[in-house]
Length: 334
Image (cartoon, rainbow, N blue to C red; front, side):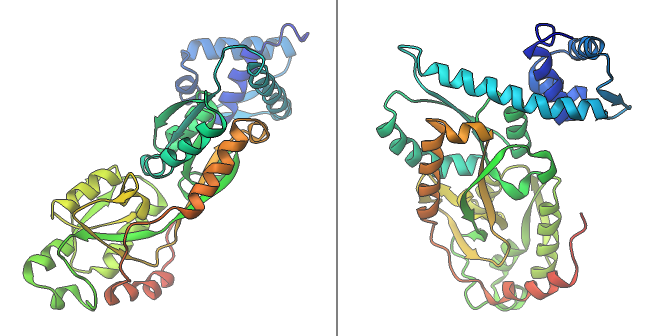
């Protein structure tokens, strides 16, 4: 196949399918129908005279030829993206555009100050911001709909990420309880709290993220609150905290989620835990980290993330401290 026959469109489809592992997922990322993807892949394979994928009922597995082409496609598409971004600087009258996707709490806490600083350097910069779950953020990156993804690194599969990761902040986990419930000095919620407070502390709000972290939180509740019951299954930290504010129960959340802008959410008491912190990172194609305005954006993002002020967090109550040894004895199943 000559170079004119192997089109960039085909290479982008091939690259996306190779990372997505299924035509269904690649179709969603590219916004193209599956028959169209299959047709383009067939043309590409016919033109080069080699099979690129072994197709099963559930996955698209790369052949040796496919793995070779993937390495070359990574370089070609990265160079094309870099050229397109660089040429924008020569387009008179156009404005720089940053397309960002990330989880709500990180966008809400870090982005306002980052943008305030960024526009002092790039007055004409424009942002296109997408609030998205980690998995959706990855899909937007792979489909090249956004340039930057802001996620917790432990919320994505390491093997599935081919983007440069820039650490930006560490977000500790806190135990959120309704305002008015004081857990300082509490060794056993079942005996040390008044009936109303005891009921609230034993009403736990759980998350349906389908991750190892979710299973760890389940075990955390079982260890520190043996008399607890799950009163709600939710899919966002924001909904969980709204229930805590209403006095319905308690939840374990990252501290960033307890912000409203730069201020702590009202109606909550927050207590530190010894859960591992949530490491926040910026995902970006490696070539973009060397280009403006991305380079400056990352620099400012790290500066803001390193000095961000957390809401008021009280010391860990005694009954939460006992869970560390218990959890270490029983590792979480993958």
